[in-house]
Amino acid sequence: MVSNFHLPPTGFGPGSQPADEDMGYMQMPSGMRTYAPHLPEIADADAAGPALALLTQVAAACDRAAATGEGEAFRLSDLPPEARRLLAETLGQGEVSVRIGGIAPVAAQESVFAGVWCVLGEDIDRIEVGAVPACARMACAPEGAALGLAAPKGPDVFNAPALLVELLDHAQAWQAGQPPHVVNLTLLPHTEGDLLWLDAALGTGAVTILSRGYGNCRVAATATPNVWRVQFFNSMDSLILDTFEVTDMPEVALAAPEDLTDSAARLREVLEAIR
Image 1 (cartoon, rainbow, N blue to C red):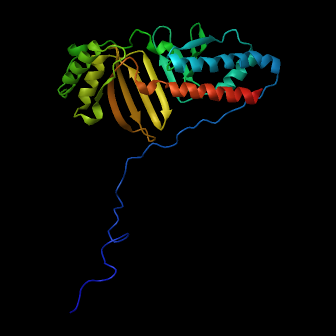
Image 2 (cartoon, rainbow, N blue to C red):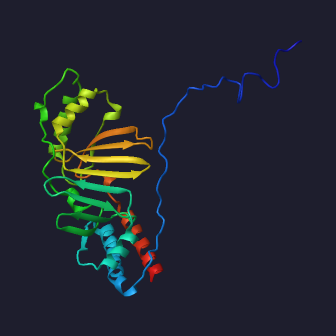
Image 3 (cartoon, one colour):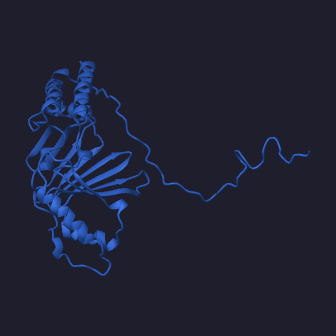
């Protein structure tokens, strides 16, 4: 009997199928920044003493914040110039920045030690230790008023009113300690008009938080209490996740207790190396 079966079989395995030259995939996030300890140069050990003492206090505050959740602040306005330079060089700049608008704008920059923030504004010059700068949790005058259901509707507004009612109901009922309520716009049908209408209905808050790691994450307060817009972008700056969260502060913006404990340990390592 003659067999038509061939060894090895044809039509299987690598190279047996035509290659699709046009097949494309979404660019995944890349380029994560990692911590690298930096030891500053000290020209005058005596002048640097106040900075080292302050960093020792900051390390202890990190441990306390990890244990209790309570933040602490340290004034910098009285620090001598050489100590100030050493402090800035040691802390560096991390991945998270915060902007609070309004009549008296405030800017906060996380250091390379998670949960340790440099905060600047009118009559504000301090280091804060905590999950997020205290000013980001304060009630601020919105930059754009919330129009609610009275926001003018264009012809391409379809699903946004129902989403707004859901968000407002959860925002009104939300209490501290509750898990966030998330509306994932990425998974829901909507038009560009729906998004613009929701922006007008919820208003624009004064707080914006930008986190740079794998791509970017933008957290923006709305003018509606406890309602936040959280957007994730990949390394090509393409929006990959778009949500509203009903909570006091989205978790993605917070330094975790484990982060604060780690920052305390790393600060002490740097101090030990400097000394």
